[in-house]
Image: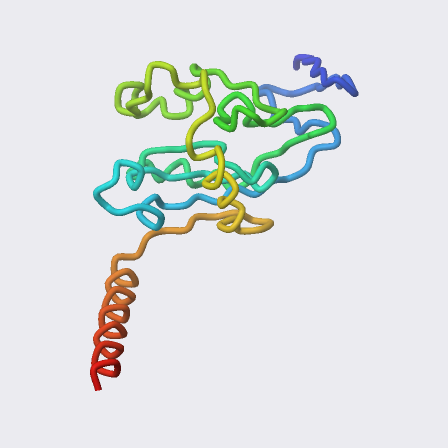
Length: 183
């Protein structure tokens, strides 16, 4: 048995554990859902941005993490705990919303969550972590809230069948409109 002291700005806790440390949620923490959006829903398949998962935090309504599309393991994270009062988030070290008050970004922590892939596979820019990313800025940054799945979070996945069906309906609709206008 060991004793571990956990400190937050508003409280200090002593935690006693048998063998392994347990994850302790900060006092005053709230549960924030994470919604993962498949990049192919948003971008043309030829765009490099379409090859990513975009993880949206329901608290900040911005992207807190991106991951390669073939790395579905990350989409299992559908809830994070945040304590705005204490400026603490259990995923603050991997959060890429650099304007969030609870952000404590560490490139090493970010890479650690992809340890079975490797840093080179991620293809991160050399200045990653030093400037606000395009998808959390301006008009694009304001649109993410429209994709949030409240309470439980989850993943919005691209469906090739639905895409083809909608494409067919759009083409059919345009053809009908053309026939009607020509008549």
